[in-house]
Length: 297
Ligand code: HEC
Ligand code: HEC
Ligand code: HEC
Ligand code: HEC
Ligand code: HEC
Image (cartoon, rainbow, N blue to C red; front, side, top):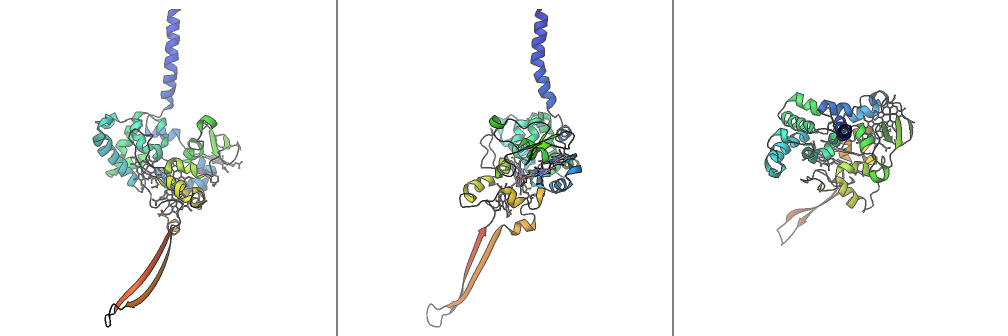
């Protein structure tokens, strides 16, 4: 009886542990598989192709300034300046350490083990040094369909609960043709700026043990654009090319950034007789038409 009780207790202790570690991805490839969106392409080719060209799709690589900055965060920050982080070597890196960037650049890292955090840190260092295989590895994971249409689609978790597995959140309810994500549910924020604001930043991330500050544009949207009468959402200004969502690297979007009016008047200034100085009065009026500060980051 005693033995049985012990076995039962052991089972009780071991099961949740086993279950939670079984849920975690142990490599970049496993994380990519867990968040696989290849099935979406068949029925949503337009959204898929636009998204593939976006920086969201390669959010650990970027222009590729992101990859280089993650590499220096690891080498110069985590392994050098952050002396209290307890990191001497790549193998000491944990998910929590990489979250100072992954909070927004790869929120699904929360579903991975420390080995994945280490693999990403090493790939960013190698990728920044020119290793194409390492760059290709980082491009396997990014902000994809499931991040916006599942993980970030609900905000108030005590009110609405956690996003459900196998559900795609959009603007409608009903059955969905995908083999794994069989149900469509409505997300209250799909058309709201706050969907984007979850990553586009309010200011320093004080929730992190070592606060970082990268994107802060949602703060200026809320505190400057909206109070001065701005009424457009991020989606209204950034989704005319659908899921490509470009900023200044797209000439059409860059042109919309500022209006410039220049007014000039030339005249001669005569301080004393015979002393004529040519002068000009130039009035330049530049107005930002973006819904937030530019540039950001
Ligand atoms: C077999 C085809 C099929 C596959 C595969 C598929 N979808 Fe869909 N999806 C649809 C159809 C059809 C609708 C429209 C349903 C309706 O209008 O009632 C839809 C609707 C949606 C919507 C809601 C659009 C809205 O108006 O709010 C989203 C978001 C979405 N799909 C995302 C995805 C994602 C992400 C994947 C991959 C994980 C995916 N879909 C895979 C067929 C598919
Ligand atoms: C999960 C976090 C996350 C969410 C949600 C998110 N973004 Fe982003 N976004 C990023 C990151 C990270 C980058 C930068 C990637 C890089 O360059 O490394 C980015 C880049 C961008 C860019 C710059 C693209 C370019 O080509 O220069 C725009 C514009 C943008 N996002 C708009 C949006 C809009 C609009 C929404 C909401 C509909 C949104 N984002 C939702 C994280 C997010
Ligand atoms: C609060 C969310 C957030 C955090 C935390 C964050 N980033 Fe970002 N980052 C973004 C978003 C959103 C963008 C793109 C939009 C922009 O620049 O306004 C971006 C853009 C960048 C860019 C410019 C991309 C390019 O290619 O031009 C670099 C570089 C970058 N991030 C590196 C990092 C690094 C390294 C860390 C960790 C030390 C980090 N970020 C932490 C959200 C974040
Ligand atoms: C950065 C966030 C983000 C990502 C990543 C994202 N979506 Fe969306 N998606 C949105 C938003 C926001 C809307 C709603 C736009 C609106 O209604 O104004 C939307 C709308 C849609 C719709 C409805 C039709 C349309 O185009 O408006 C479909 C279908 C869809 N997404 C599929 C996908 C698929 C498939 C992927 C991955 C290839 C994907 N989305 C990736 C934010 C995202
Ligand atoms: C009134 C239209 C408008 C609204 C609203 C708006 N944007 Fe922009 N945004 C622009 C324009 C135009 C640019 C191009 C300016 C540039 O990047 O130089 C831009 C640039 C950006 C950039 C690149 C920033 C950089 O470093 O230059 C990001 C990222 C971005 N927007 C995200 C967002 C997000 C997220 C929201 C919602 C919180 C939003 N935008 C709301 C018009 C808008």
